[in-house]
Image 1 (cartoon, rainbow, N blue to C red):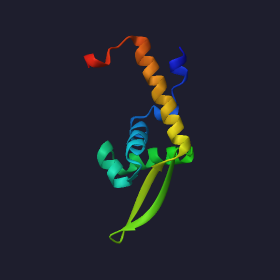
Image 2 (image 1 turned 30 degrees about the vertical axis):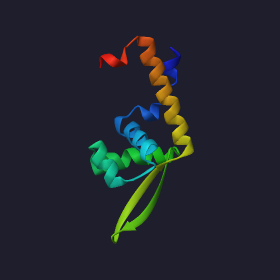
Image 3 (image 1 turned 135 degrees about the vertical axis):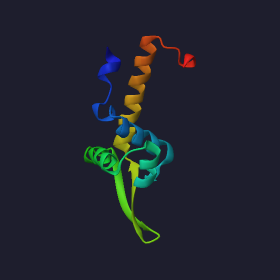
Length: 104
């Protein structure tokens, strides 16, 4: 099934997919905001964001907000393309299964 082969293994993890979706929607978010939105622990979120950065799906920058170090994340062009392809494959998979989204 073509939809299955189009899924991105890197985006199959809940936190990695969630972070990319949030960043696609909001543009740029802090680590603390991602942590709160995704209900993740520091260690788990940090590890998952690092994996996305290593594959150039995300970019990060460090800044100071009220004299505290803050890390900001943004979806890269590579990450945006990967997310769009992954979501298209998920849509195709749902369509192939004949699941009515309105039933939900």
